[in-house]
Image 1: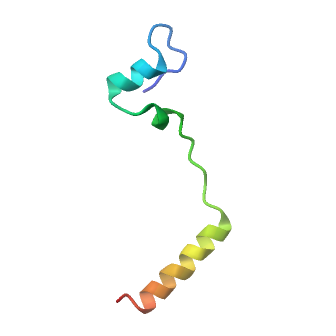
Image 2: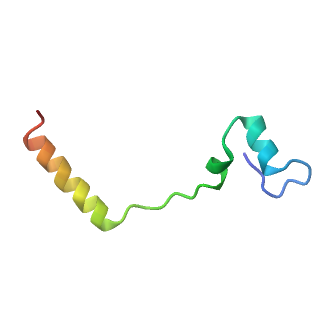
Length: 52
């Protein structure tokens, strides 16, 4: 979609034409840590025990 090495269109112009933010072009997702996943499982289990 976005071509960083494009010879005529800058990344900024490409993002504007596609109506996406430049920050979304540069975003590189970071995987969740094992500690975070363990905490989410504990919270999910607690919620399932008492869903309100």
